[in-house]
Image (tube, rainbow, N blue to C red; front, top):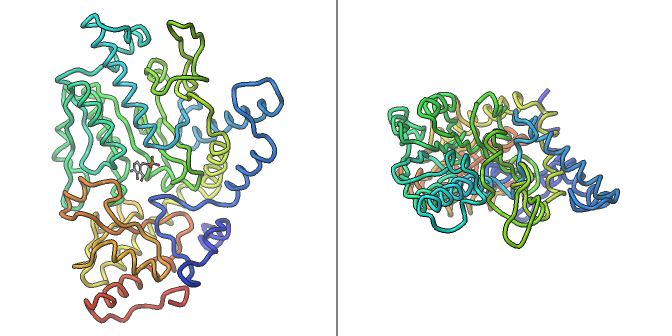
Length: 445
Ligand SMILES: Cc1ncc(COP(=O)(O)O)c(C=O)c1O
């Protein structure tokens, strides 16, 4: 049975108090999740027993570290329905998305250098890669208005540097991707880069329909799975996307590690992003040949302890069962939505029901700045996020500059949600907006 109270016991930090002895109500898992003991133990065990650089050295520690590092790749690949040679370690999802965009950029630069006969960039990028990934004026990259900046700015940059045009799928008033605007995906689309779920509204994207449209025009699909990977089953092969990105720290894993997924045959000739040690075969003073993927994309000394912690995180989530996690969080989403509906003057940004959405709930309190909302909630021990959540365009579309956001994780309980809702009543009372009988808040506020 899925028992969030028992799960909480695995997360030492959730046992602490904040703001003068208040129980912590952590509703900021959309920003970063807390870590269970097995993840902390995995990192500790690595540092106390096997610490060494991977893929180098002939000693036992290097061997153990390399084995654990590669075993983690298999575990994370299995968790998202991929093969191990389709997973590249990155610092986070942002780096993974930049890696893809720079692969396209480097191919574009090489193709353009070949056309103009200038420079030697084309030497290191195969003709096939130039053909496959090179963008030029007239090509189009499609994103959506709901993107986190991490899945928007790199594509803006790529468009600006290659002369390609950035287009976007618009949003409904509820903040869902608007099917009426899917027609921006057209014959000139080369890349469709789309979020799996909004980090503001929690709305889940209809990926199969968008993949179908992208396939029809021969465009590559990049999926930002940052918000979904820890909250619902994700099978990248079944979704049939070409590339995907996610971060361990949102998946009850360590900070400092994320992953890029790329279909094997695409990673084969995608030009590298970062270059240097550990990703090369032969280096002369004039030129370099690169290793096959995934090593080709893992330049420099790697974050081995974090990778091993990432494995422990996906094993932890797997043991809970992602179907059960999704069902529990849907309940939490519904409880938040219902609770908010009962607080006068609070506007939910995003879908008003829990269908096809995550327990990521942004809202605004009438005439109170989100930072003030966050501060009052914080004084009660309730941690939410405030600001634009690195997604300014969707806020603009929804008619606000910023919002407050509550987001759940595997350890979120009904009592957490109730404390949050009681906190919203308190926000209104504090700012003299209305007298309301607030339900009791856990932690003796
Ligand atoms: C939807 C989405 N995409 C991308 C990111 C970027 O993740 P990271 O900061 O771990 O690179 C986030 C983080 O908030 C996110 O929510």
